[in-house]
Each structure stands twice: as C-alpha cells, then as structure tokens.
Image 1 (cartoon, rainbow, N blue to C red):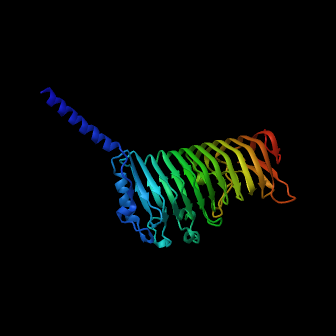
Image 2: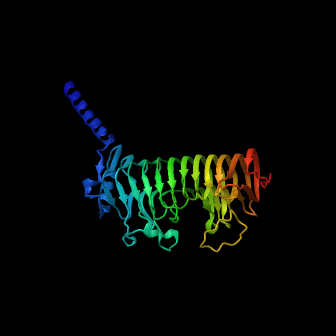
Image 3: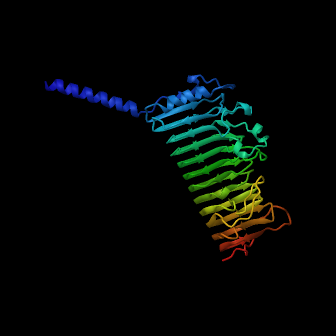
Length: 398
C-alpha cells in the first residue's frame, strides 16, 4: 500500500513539475515567414506580421521571440502590436529590412506606422533596417503633425531598443511615450538634413530613459525631450546633421510642461544648428530643471549653448506673453570646439520669469570661421561662472 502511494505521489509531482517547466521555459522562435510573410518588398506583409505577433504575444512561456529574417524586405502598412502579452519577456529580432508604403494613399493611419503598446519587458534589436520612405511626405505642405512617426512605443516598461538602423521617417524616427525604464543603444538614425521634422528620438511622459552609443543625423532634433519626462541620461551620442539635443519645445498653447533630471554627457555635435538646447514657448507654465550638459565636443555648430524662451515656429503668429516655463538648475561643463556663428552662447530667458542657477564651467568655444570671434548674450539669466570661459559670459547676472 505504501509503495503504491509513493508511486502515485511522485508520478503526480513529476507531472506537475514537468508542466511548470514547460510553462516557464523559452518558447521556440516564431518566424514571420511561418505565417505567410513573403518579404519581396512589394507584397503587403502586414497581416502575416500581426498573426505572428499574436502567436508570440499569446505564448505562455517565460520568453518568446519574433524573428524578422535576414535577406528579405518586408512591406508593412501601419500596424499596431498590442499587449499585454502572456510571456513575461518579448523579443523582436529584426535582421531583415522593413519598409513603409511609398504611396501616401496606401497609409491607413496618418499618425504612426509601427506601434508597440502596453508590452512590458520588450526587446527590439538586431542588425536590420527600418525604412520609413518619408520622401513623399516631406514634399507635402501639411503641418508636421499630419505626418506619421515611423516607430512608436507607448506604455512599454523595461523596454530595450538595440542595434538597428532607422532611415527616412516621414516624421519622428522613434517616439517613446508613457514608458518607465528604457534603454536605447547602438542605433544608427539617418535622414537628409533638408527633411522636415524628422527627429531622431522623441521622449515624452517617460522616466528612467538611457540613450547611448548611437549616431543620429536628421533634419530636426537628434534627441528631443518633451513634457512629463524625468531621469533621462544621454551618453556617447554623435549628432549631425540636425538641430542638436533639445529639451522641449515646452509650454506650447499655454500648456503646463515639466522636465527634470536630464544628463547629457560625452556627446559630439557636427555641423548642427544647435548643440545643447532648451526651448520653450511664451505663455506656458511649469518647469525645466536639474539639467546637466557635460563634456561636449563641438564641430562647427551654429548655436552651441542656447536657452530660447522665445521659441516660435514659422507658421505661428507668436506674441509676447508674461507667463513662461521656469528654467533653473542648468549646468554646462567642459564644452570644447567651434561655433559657425558669432553668438556661441545664448541665454535668452523670459523677461518676467528669469532663468536661475545657470552654471558654466570650463568652456572653450572658438569660431570655425577664420578671423572671427565668438561671444555670449543673455536676457534675464542668473547664475555662476567657474573656471576657464571662452567666450566670456559677463552678461550672466549673479
């Protein structure tokens, strides 16, 4: 009797343990080809990708992987990869090329092209390429908000984006919003300097974001940090062409905007319109604070250091207003290189809401134009100067 009991006990336990191990193991990779993707660059593979995503997202395994194979080009119309998923970790391995429709009329969504939403512990990586085919959009006279971003992540916590090449987005190449815990590294992002509003990476309403070891050259900001963002670290990014690394724009249409805890270090700007930039609209409210730009290399940059609280895009009739986003606790440390304009440092703060605790330390910015000099200008900026400074920033009020 005892023997029979023990056999039944271990048989039952063994079955339970085996079942648990199956549930917690890594699932076999899912290749989009298995679900009918053609990969000839002409056939619409959107439905095949969505079916493959459904299989990966619905797998009850510790980790599941979606594979976009090398050697093929997959044409996708706007698609949304929705979570939450059953697997605790989702991997998307992109080795091939993904291209957007080159005919604007074929776009079913004018806001975003490839969207991942509500997927935690998502990793999107590989040696592949994402081509937004934005040239047709850049010719349109519509406002930028009428053009789609190429790759977007919404409410994806513990997100990793690694290794890919992103080119020619209609608008932003990568948008991250509502995410907590993001690592972006080893990306190559390119679009022509003349392409409008083709930001490299846009961050909004997100926290604990790291961007590192990447090369970004576009027609707009290499990295833009929008409202609701905090604890952002950007290191070893080479930017150019483009509009630099920007906090903002903030406070548009009288909105309350908040950004704090940004650190930009060991970055290089080559031929950009701006280097380290903070830009806000008049009439807004809120704050941009605890911002550090450190160890920055400049190569013929038009506005190496700029706070612009009078930002106004060309299609707006902007008027002087008393309200402003409060800018404070901003440090510029260890800037080296050249400016393509005379005014290398611009601290243009609101006349009614001053910039405070602005610190400059160890700055050496000379002119890239033979025989020219550089200078600084200030409006209602207050702070302290340390160490060697060229050009001198005598206009900064103590």
